[in-house]
Image 1 (cartoon, one colour):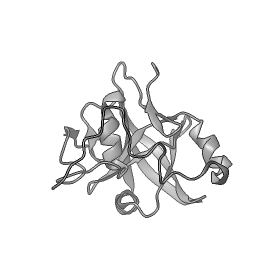
Image 2 (spheres, rainbow, N blue to C red):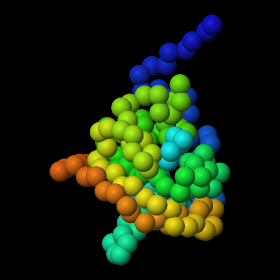
Image 3 (cartoon, rainbow, N blue to C red):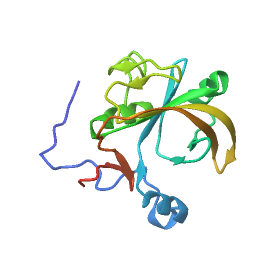
Length: 177
């Protein structure tokens, strides 16, 4: 086998060869990228999970959680079957976990093989999550190329303090960045 070790700082490509050319990029996608979003992990009994950065919480009677998920994801099938799911707030230490559940990082042994997990009636949550909520599915509808999932919040577990992981312009960020 032949390996080439480039000089430090040398790159094979000066630009991402798979990137959409600047003139063809969707202005709406560019706008979405400029809005910082919390990085959350949605899980359901089964278990199944997916990294989701389009999550919104609304206070009310009952309190509500909304999010956009991939209708073809294993997570959606598990949510539909069980009628419930958990949403964990991820922190800076969870970058690899977020990439694993987004399908961007390998997961030998399965998505839940690594890390420590707490079993809940809503789905497993990372033991070191910055809090989590247990949700009951109320409905969904097609929304753009995703499903808008609507749920009632039934349980909330929050630590005293937790730093959130954010997604902004295609990268993970923290409040300190």
